[in-house]
Image (cartoon, rainbow, N blue to C red):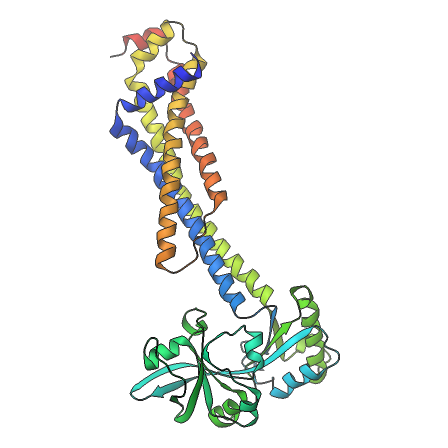
Length: 407
């Protein structure tokens, strides 16, 4: 019997009981679809996180205040007040630091912002004009904070689109209007373009004010929350990090790096950590989804065992007419492979559609993982062979005489 006859015979056998064939295939469809959808959504989430981190700035280094110990208890990084505006100015002026493009000193606090009867608790960020370059800020309308605003302690503000929506309504023209921050009136001079985000990391839910105004008029402090630094290129980020680190150690009169009262975070480190977390989560979800593939494979084996039982007399007749064992094995294997391959194709379509719909609903980029699709094809074929082998061998080992007597 050639392959065309085997294929024709297998298709004929499968179409005799369409409902049972469909139910057997359903397990594979759900398994393959789940794996593809979850892998695709995991990669979409990873790409979304990476794009949000990269939108914060290119080649970014962030200098954070260090931690401190009190009665043997060590506080979290960033809990001290060891960074000042003078540190940022010194980094800019230093001839030792050659791989830094821009330096942005920042003071971050949360405060109540109000206008008329509307108010919102949001992040207030005191910055200089360098922030726009370091953090890739694009203006939607108006202008950004200037150096003159800092020198003159100007009470001006630039709003993120979320703040505009909360206080004035969607699409409102806010340039020239006033808001109150801690009961102090500020004039709005600009609105930034949307960057997205959520919670405390929402880049659209920020009010930018001059750093000097934030320090002296709003919060009454002389320290910084952090210093953002843009390296000249991705290739020199490590060198820039070392230059800034050793410079601040010398400036703070610290000889032992382990006792540094600051820490420097690299954008590459943050991206790596985020990718590792999302990758692990995706692998975990894919592993859970793969269980349904195993269940689907067992379903295929059960259906094939039932088929062998129902076709015992047919198998006996074939063997009595001279059919060899490998022919019987091949026939039942082809039937199992057709079942799983068909399930794999429909599963790929289902998984792709599900991932596209969910990505669109939660506003994430749609990423189609070709590796998972290739894996689905290989796995569906492998399941057909693995779980079809035992029923096929059982059919091939039937005694012709006993099979013909079977009722």
